[in-house]
Image 1 (cartoon, rainbow, N blue to C red):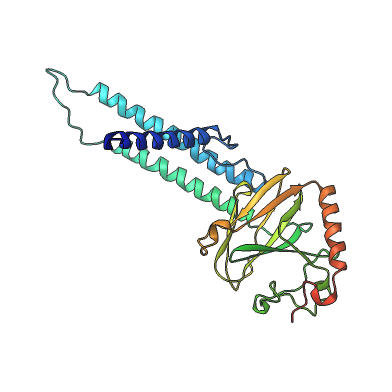
Image 2 (spheres, rainbow, N blue to C red; image 1 turned 90 degrees about the horizontal axis):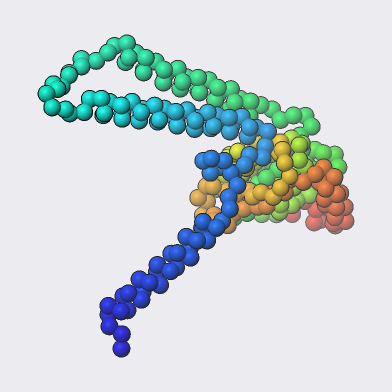
Length: 286
């Protein structure tokens, strides 16, 4: 029979072994990103966003090193020494003006430039943008593409029902052309204009590599979200709002592909949509 001490030692050893395996797995996992852990940017608008973040990052490092350098210098220069009296300073108005003015100018400049970038990101989508509707619900995403006309059928959030999940106006001739997808497939180097909605609670359209985060609010259509992917690859659309018990699994795959591959995928979807019976097509509501 093992003594309590041996049992405790054995449990401790097992716990340590488990922790070591976890730590090894974590260290072995490769991560692509920049110096502060962000994933590599994949969109045109993200370049400006990263420009601000990089400036703030390096400016913070410079200020930290400068402050710590002065701090250490004063610790050494004015350390306690025998037969040396302490000197009491009443302050220096010139220095106080300088170290108050400089941060004010830096923050003011960041605010002005940040507002400019915000305006640039929120400018109207280009005329050649691919229009796609993305609707969130507990706990998944529905994605609607336009048909051969390239124009999404009219829709209204007030018309959303369990049968008509996009609120599409059935009288619009283009309604029979639209098709849905469970993955967001987009061509590289082409602007993509997202019309964002929610059918129940607040969700969020969050793609770190695209530098996009936008809440989807019930009863509203958020129409400012647009981006242009700069490289092909596989990404993930995730909801970052705590929207319920299934929130952790509310995601959808994103594929950025070449224009040729997108055209093939699109043609296949259009062909499949045209073969559906009229009563089961996207725009029909019972």
